[in-house]
Image 1 (cartoon, rainbow, N blue to C red):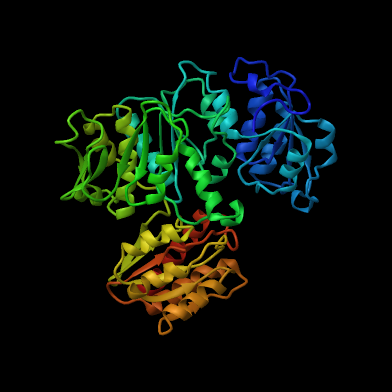
Image 2: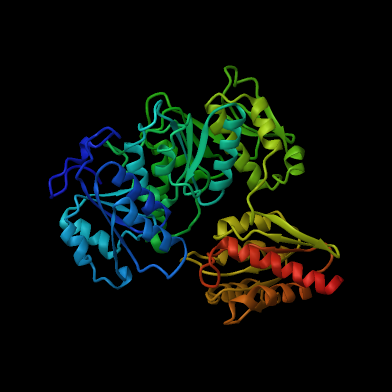
Length: 511
């Protein structure tokens, strides 16, 4: 949402670091890393900044950021934001008379503060739009590559950044990956390329036209499956947010040949003249596609004679050797390769970058193998689409599943994988849908629920019961298909708890 607000600021004129931001009254919703980066940036530009956030705990990173706001010259009002009446705001924000609101990704579209902004005519931007308008602080301006999708975003961003760096480019992976884009665009060393991970929340707030609309070098939506429906309100709204990634792309719109939704997004996107559609998938590639031929990953897009030839990038056995051989990870490698090749990274640099790459923790990570049983931590599988990929890579599984389901349907996931299940261990507080799905589709399967109010005992109990079911040749797989915040601080906390419980169990059993 751009233009002039009812309070009179001409926001359409604010398209550069060198524009006149001085005195602009801005409200910032949220005090996470994104909210603080926005506050820090706007104070540096001379804006009058007030951050609105829920009360922070007595210690921790939120407390440190709250203290720093006073140091940098921003104001802070703390209120129970979940207790606000619809279309209302704290008195301090109303009295600030903001000409612009910057919203952090976690705020639902129907949050009372956003309804208040709509009712009072205050324009709302996300941090990504703000960063795009300010991207010229350090010259020359970096090109942007955008990555979204239900699953695989962080891995693809890291892969693409590693390939670009291998070719000598100054590259920053940023966005939803953990480094705010506002921090990246202010880094004094400057960058050639920003590889930006975008969540559906961030894409929801991006305009497709006007001065705040992104014009990226390349963009990719890796896949689309129902997720975050509680936030977006419907599957259609979620898909529409994801499709924004392709708007105005200049060089390459990269889509998943196995996911018709991503192809349709590209077909319907308003892109810059000359932008190409480039597919990726695990099958034999056609012209303008990346794919796999007899175990060889190939580029048939970024070469002149693509009708008759392909360029070899790497092989599946080579990827297996460095822990990147799972089919869904191979797909991420292909997507990242397409991004890198769009920037003229030679195939040799793509190959060498892959040889030194390792997946982040909690992504299909083997934590132990003992007695013929493998223990796999894929705590990052926070939705059914990701869990499906993990399950499909195994033949016989004891499945640890459950958590916060975020409004998604687990019925088809359970039905699809019944044949490979040795048993299931349900964790989390949101167990009813899983319990009923197993009852309908696997009535004879051993299904154990971990019903414990002591969150520190959840994983030790789950691991013990899983070990009782597992047989040599099985995989005990933590692929929860759900978010973690019901019993854990994050998916990484959940994965770490699993790995620690496995280690403790095996040490006791085999010492």
